[in-house]
Image (tube, rainbow over all chains, first blue to last red; front, top):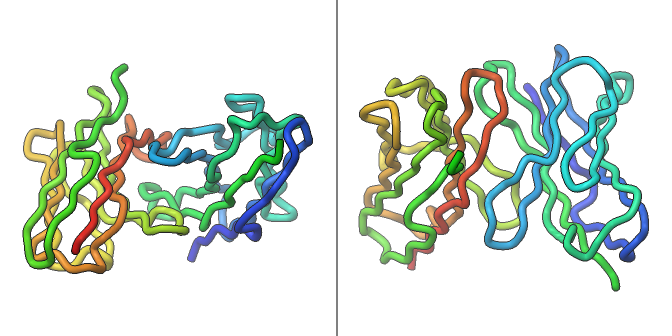
Length: 113
Length: 113
């Protein structure tokens, strides 16, 4: 069965520092992978997605993610975080049945001034 | 593109009461999904529709839950005889077709007292 693991429940970084959020997935075939962000009281907003092709994917708000098949990973990165990036970040994969998203438990990003 | 909307945004009810939530997807989207999210967790799939047909229901969806999408446009999710364990955020998403990006509404937060 497919699964997604986000090993870090919380991450604290200083404003202006670089960020990497980890995501590992379990899936037999080539996965469709997503990163969403959820701010307090807000819905889930798509940051970026990987379906095929170039393994380095650019998203909105300066985020990027790299698909590494050998490591079953799809880590999210940003070179310099802003206070407005404080939110919860979710990694997800489309399941075998090709309809539902299977989600990680999320990583809460805290920004230190 | 007005995005996915959900109504109400918040609902407080007493145990045993029935509640109904509404989701309006992006207008040309054929697929509509319902997820449930509890605090500190990623969303969990509940059910989905392809146009007006409900094609899959999760085991999480007990007999007290029913969803409809009568004309292939908006959808309703009803919970009968609510229990405290039903307290959660109920999220709706839509996508153009199978396997494509899902866009989420702001969610309905339910609190059962």
